[in-house]
Image 1 (cartoon, helix red, strand yellow):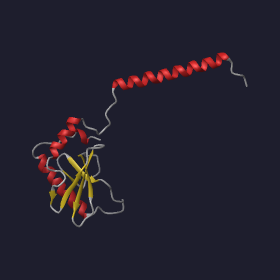
Image 2 (cartoon, helix red, strand yellow):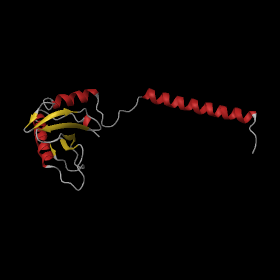
Image 3 (cartoon, rainbow, N blue to C red):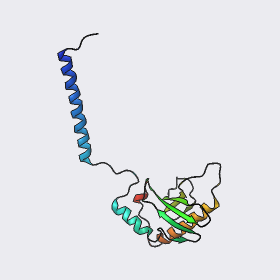
Image 4 (cartoon, helix red, strand yellow):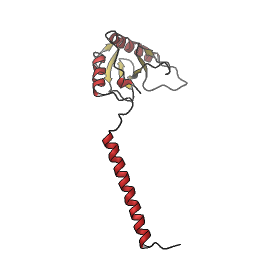
Length: 157
């Protein structure tokens, strides 16, 4: 095995320094170019418009036997709405952009689809309470759509 000499050690150090310099230059160039927004994240204006669209579809709203407990910020193209009924456990529904190629939702509007945020096992039927809650929430969203379509930017996966 040949011994490392002064020239080979200097060459390795120069190569390593060049590699570090190249990584620094490329990472700086990427930072200056601006990172791409994550998919499914709407702009601040789109999110503000989505909250304005939802309006009264907010915590405290009554949907028959259900009431809205929480509405989460859009994430990954989904807004999760938590519903509660007196004799039922809390139920989380995912509101997404309606997509003809997606699985069949529990309920839908002209622009939106409602799914269980936490699916039931494949061999279990959808609980009837979930269908009733999804239908009630869809009706409230349809009423909002009557005033104008929702901004779908934050609901893009």
